Length: 242
Image (cartoon, rainbow, N blue to C red):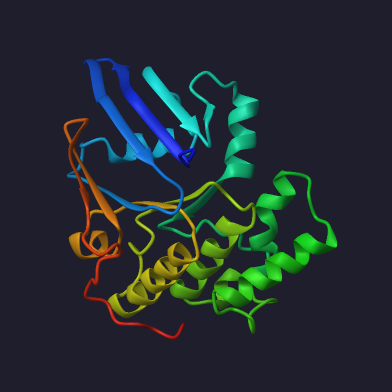
C-alpha cells in the first residue's frame, strides 16, 4: 500500500548570520492511508519545519519526501503549488477564511485554484458543509460565525480537493475547551471514515485523541508511539456542534 506521505532521512538547515541552524536531522516517517498522527515536541524541536515540508511549503536540504508515491523533493514551484491545491488539505489555528466569502464560497476555494467548478463540485461542497454541521449557514460570512463554526468551515474546505491527507496545525489553539472537544470529535469521525490526518499539537490530551504520537526533539524523532486501541479516549466530551 502506497503511503499518503513518506519522509526518508530528511534534513533541513537554514544559513543565518550567526551560522547554520539545523532544524531537522535525518527524520524518517511513514504515514499510511487512514492513519491519524500527532506530531509533538517542545518549541524549537522541528515541528513547524516538518509541517512546512509535509505541506510542500518548503524543500528539504537532504533526504526524500514522497507524496502519494510521488517524489516531490526536487519538484519545481509550479508542481508544488499544484500538489498543495490538489493533494493536501490544510487546517490552520487561525482558520484562514476569506472574510468577503460565504461559508460555501470558502469551502470552494481549493477548487477555484484548480480551475474546477462543475455542478457536481458545487454539490459536493454543500454536502461537506452539511457534514460538518453547517447546513443552515451556507450564506453566512466568517464574521457571522463563532470560532468553532469557522474551524468547521476550514475542515470542510480541507476536504474539497479529496486530499491524500489533512495537515492540521494546532487546529484547536484558538478555541475554548468545549469547542475543542467538538472539533476533535469531528476530526476523529473523519478519520473513522478513512481520512488520513497529520496534526501538529503541543497539548498531550489532544495527542491522546489520535492513533499515533510522533515526538520530536532537537530536530530528530525521539519516539514514535502507536496508541493502544487506535484512537485514544482523551478527556474531551462529545459536542453536537456550536
